[in-house]
Image (cartoon, rainbow over all chains, first blue to last red; front, side, top):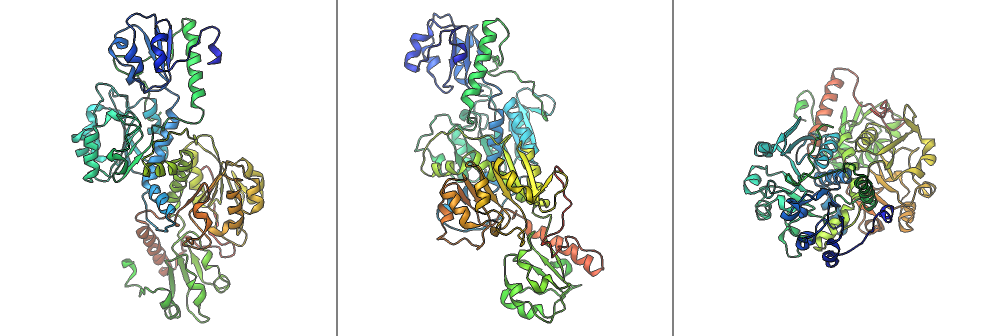
Length: 303
Length: 303
């Protein structure tokens, strides 16, 4: 943030130092987007006018005091679209080509040929049609898959979320890239898993709380779905005692789908650009509609 | 092969039964493309007019007696293009997103975040520009990568193999999808590895003998290249004592990149179609130029 140290006084604090710093700051950059600290120590008296968060999801910032204030909230929309889309395609191919088994067999020096799946023509349902969901849909379409998108706000080829139950049965892959809001919490519940096909795999790169974890565990245990690649969890890091680590067809990754080498710099550049807009009194990029819980999207698919 | 049992008398033999069967057959379908048996027992007296092989590569059939005969050789060109291209993209994403490490960490219930690579804009060199190489190039281009193709016969955007030394230094991934012929044997040797960049990864879905294995092992041991995903080997199955199993950055798979669920049926359908052409005296599909060692390609890239 060297580019703004001068016009602004920049202080770097951890959760413990946040209480002191919040009281007399004009703007806050929340680097640890998973932290509950901001909501926990939000002061009654402050002069904050702008909060920026280093992620696309702003769910930790939607506590009532910020929600109902006139503080502007911006996010890092656009930085992670490509990396997450590639990660999702990698997970689809990991499943289709049985590559996790290949890695485990290699560690035992075991040569075991298998016939594997082709992804071309397979059906994907992407839930969430912001820039991340649209990038996922575009990349998977480029790779030959047949993609449907659902979102809260239907538009063009994007179906409304009320179509989710009707669209789930056809999906070979269900990808979650929706923001976590009161409307989307627990979206994949027992009933939703009941509509998925036995060969279907879930890929969650959104937020853990989009899924009812107990319902997911039952569906996996009972073979009602074939797998789940989970990059996000209600509680992170995932507890070593969680049954998810070893359920059949599950791939656990530590909330890393977005984080390409260089993302710190890309994110700082976005923040610095927004800072200069803010100082100049110009409209900020990526202003979150706090009532919706995300930046309203005009993205369409195919792009 | 039910569709031809009637017009023809179909016999199914293994290597041991081949000697007896070859002497009085008109056509031979070689299902085990890796077998040396056909060359080993090829009879001096026979009435064979046509040999079809269940693979794209015909290297095991290029023994002098068949090479210098007027027996027609056909292959299974076109069946495996899509599956191999997807497999290669899966391997690229496995490397870029460090998914093998993720699988191994999961088995230890270990949560270790890593920043990973974006594949968009990375450079790929595909060696071999038949339908398989062209499908690989098209799919990787669709995924945002920058692809160069080299082949024995330059055409359009396909560079001649004499350009290989000049093209190797820029490649983040070098993909081998060339036929194994006297001209391509040992193509990647000590000098070639010396021109690759330290971060480069080799992906071999062609034939093991395209690579000088000792040179590859040295390059991997000394960190002169970053990895190798090997689906094919000079001797298969790979011996459990091979150092390749555990060298850094190596992924071993058991010659399965082509073999999608359903390939037996697709291949049988191709053979039956060719059988009907043969009986009717029409030109066969996929006639191999035995001197070249492959079906001459008119494929271009981008398609």
